[in-house]
Image (cartoon, rainbow, N blue to C red; front, side, top):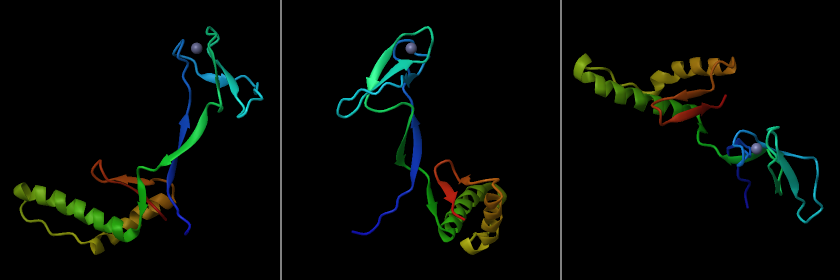
Length: 137
Ligand SMILES: [Zn+2]
């Protein structure tokens, strides 16, 4: 079996109080010596007395499959070219003939974005609201 890598996204899970609906349940510091151990929680709203016991501590972090994904420079340029060509095609009706863009044309643009990412100015580009690309540098 080979090693498998997958990008995941951390998600914070919290438990909102079902009684007052404003507070959140927090551990009391007590651990019940059951198997598995259980953790009594109480609402952190001072006007509320609700409590519940879980076999985990809230808030907690879980990992989910990442929605956006990392692709390489070549794929980025190819997708950008396809996106620009698609928009140009729509604009031809009013603007006349526009040149086809190739992925080679976009390497310079990619280098600019890459620099922005290295400076911490940007790390995500949204092309059309559907394609989200995380740049890997
Ligand atoms: Zn409450």
